Amino acid sequence: MTRDEIIKLASQAIDDTRSEVDLPAQMLDLITTTFEALSVPGMTAGDAARELANGLKSDIGITYDATRIGQWRRGERAIPQPVQDWMLRACIAHAIGQCGGTAPGDDAGLDRLAAMLCPPTRPSQK
Image 1 (cartoon, rainbow, N blue to C red):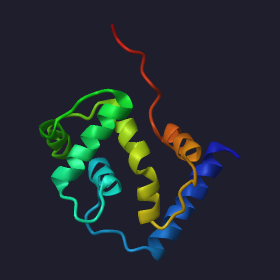
Image 2: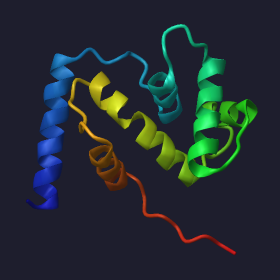
Image 3: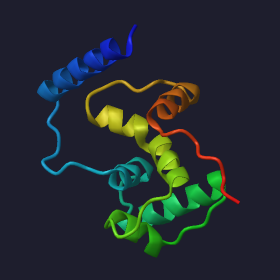
Image 4: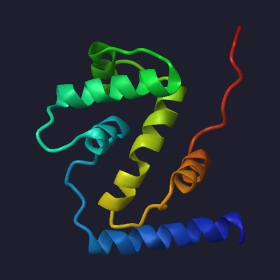
């Protein structure tokens, strides 16, 4: 299947989904969607930010505080690429489900999908 055929099929699937699912009036962003994916009923936005910070620390070994996460959420600072990649992996299944789709059923499938959507890993600068 060519790239153009894949894009056409994806576009058709998105159009089909839009007719079946009521999307929120305000479009969500990566941070808000990640908060939703990490949250359980009763959690506050602060709880979700702490959950995000804990996940980043345990999975990629980088520590961020609620202040920095708030700056990302408000668009005051750019989100580092490794953090964007982590958030995409953390919320992709949730986002697909919210739009009426079916996410891959296993971690390997989610990782493959996320890798397809993330930019290439940049070499570390010394």
